[in-house]
Structure formats: structure tokens, C-alpha cells
Length: 215
Image 1 (tube, rainbow, N blue to C red):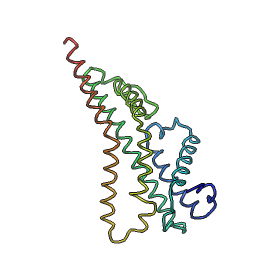
Image 2 (cartoon, one colour):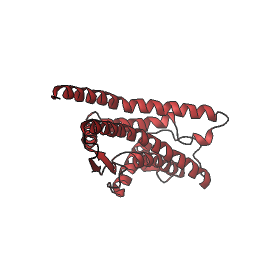
Image 3 (tube, rainbow, N blue to C red):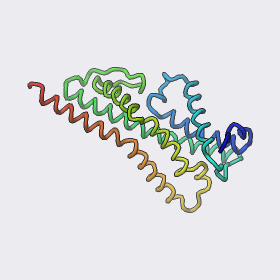
């Protein structure tokens, strides 16, 4: 749709739809590693979230039906959208946590289990190997365009989990919850695939190094 958002932003339905999209994007940013850190200025987070929300709304046509206009219903749907974004960001955080756990195992096996480094990106103490694995994984994540995959999944989520779906559910609530779980699992597999490959390669390299070092 040509100039959809800029020309119609002051229409009530378009503005409310933009706010709901912004809620899901904000939830993703709050729970994602690095972006969710307090070291990232709030204005930067808000600017990025607003820009992505504008792009998403500009590519969606037509507007979904049933956008709530009452304050109570709008707050409920907005909270629902925010929770969806948090869930998506949590999946991304799990990938980085897996790298941290792998580093802790390596530290324990190499005798560095008591030595930790503060990681400002995750705002927690990291083991030495875990810290460097975190940096390597972050660079690898960007190299394989993992950030673009996250944005693609965010856009696709509006097809499988459209805005306001919760307010339109009827007696099929249990079925909808099951379908949401399947969708989130599918997104998790898509995001975790590179992590699984990376961890297998990491353990393979560490095994080779361990065999090569004299006992």
C-alpha cells in the first residue's frame, strides 16, 4: 500500500493499530539480549522500535478487523501483544544462554570455574570461556544475518498470531493455545538451528584441542 502509514496515521484505527504493533516490537526489544540491556539508551530502543513498527504497519494491508476502541479491551490486547514480543525475545535469549552454559562447562573442565568476568551486554557474571564464546557467538549471529531472521520472524508472527486474535477467540480457546505453542516452537527451531550447529562445531574443536594437548 503506497504511503499507507504517513497519510493515514491520524485515523483512529490506523493509530491504534500502530500502537499495538509497537507493543509487540517493544516486548521483543525488552527481552532480547544486548538490546534489552540497560546500557543501551532508552531513546535508542524507542527509536528502533518505532521505526520497525512503522515499517511493519506500512506493509500490512488491509487493517485487521476488530481493533478494540474501548480502553479496557485495548489495554488487554496491548498487554497480550507485549507478552508475545517478550516470548519471542526470550527464545533469542535462550540461544545466548546456551553459549554461556557451554562456557561454564569448559571452565569447570579446565580449572577456571572460580574465575568470572562481568558481561555488560547480559548484565551478569560470565565464566572466562563463556564470555569469549558469547562474543564469538554474537559475531557469528550477525554474520549469518540472525538479526534479519529475528525481524523476519517478527513480521511473520502477525500472520500466525494476528493482532487482536485473543479478543476474537470463542470456545476454541484450548485449540488456539495449542496452535500458538506449535508456532512458537517452530520459531524456536528456526532460531536455534544455527546455535545447534555452532555448539556441535565448538565441542568438536575443543575435543580436538584436548586430544592434541599433552596430558
